[in-house]
Length: 149
Length: 104
Image (cartoon, rainbow over the protein chains, first blue to last red):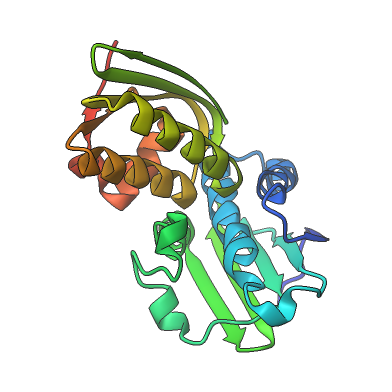
């Protein structure tokens, strides 16, 4: 039987770069309820920042989205065993080749000084990163981190 | 992210303050690159001790200034990277590529 989350939140905000720090602070405010260590909290903030920045930089970066509403859907659940599940979703252009996008140093925007390390950092700072993406439908990134509480 | 910049005898000292992410890196990089082009320093010393947050966009910023200094025949030195910065630099292996100075 699937465990029920102890607590959860969902929020939607515009895919604007000024909201990168906003997303870090709301996730931090929420997971602070678990009384985490400083480094664990920093890891979660960084992983979420990577996922949200990806949406802002790439999620809607096609001419057909120029006039559409560009939104980031962020949610988080935590469970009694200390598992934290964070979902960052967009309804944008999707990723053609997810495996390629997740390769270290791979970037489609080198001129923008993108390091191509976003997914690598997410993987290093969490226990599991799952990406579901469909061209033209959007992308969902699920970050799972097991905390000792 | 704010910064303080000073150039003397071909050494440009920049101290960065606050959070280094995609949103904050872009304006800082444009201004700092303009200053590098104008002052033409031999060494750029980037003090990262006051950085409270750094993600892969921060890495992009550091790598970009590393390349910029290489392109003018100069060098980049990182000074006292804060805990969050050091963690990301190590994850990406940049601590081995870019000279880092730890001052006590």
